[in-house]
Amino acid sequence: MADPKVCVALDGTTVEEMIDEAARANLAGADMVEVRFDRLYLISPDPTIADEEEGEIVELPPEVDWDTKDMSSIDVDIAISSLKEGLPLPVIFTVRPVSEGGFFPGVESERLDILRKAIESEVSWIDLELSISESERDGLGKLAKENSCKIIASKHDINGVPDSDDIAKIVRDNQEKGDIVKFCGTAQNHSDALQIIEAAMQLKGEGLNHSLMAVNGGGDWPRLHAPMLDQSLVYATMKNEFKISDKGLINVRDLRDAWALLEY
Image (tube, rainbow, N blue to C red):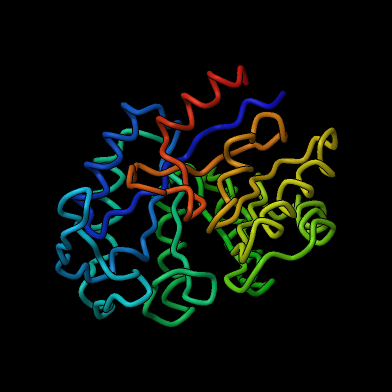
């Protein structure tokens, strides 16, 4: 049975928030953290407070509705340096484009420049989407190798989940493009979520490095059963809100407790 690493995806929208959250993730049992650099461009709105039967509930609008800052508002070099100094765990550095569910407000050339700077800072891992043009990916891959930076070769489907054969094909066809191939889909129902499980079952025993998951209901199943599914890496969160599983997410402590209970 696989012994997957656990990565906590940081939800902060400032460098300071990410550093604080990473320290808590370290204590909670994370092996590494994901810096979503594109989140630094988000402007967090003021929360609304609603009176419910359970008491006062603090709510924020969906992140897709948040405003973003100008590109000039973030000094990339200083931000990367501060993160490198302040984070206690190995880092997966990500700058997710809007087309794959991210928030980066600039153009692709600006995004790639940030990825290059992160690699040159000798970050542990870099997330390079499979959608990046072949020539650009080759250059970034070469730079990553020169700086001993491992690669997450990722694909994010914000419109749905393909069938299990297609997901397995993504993993098989792109092993040479990264140290781990990541696929994350958007489940519309539990049948979609099962496609992730079935793809992982198809890949069992092939010795391939992958991380498969989905958002929305059922998306937490492949995370919970990652050791049985030979997953290499599992993404968790520090969020601990009510019905977090409806988002397909799982708290890092709950994940560790579940694995102990299931004797994984």
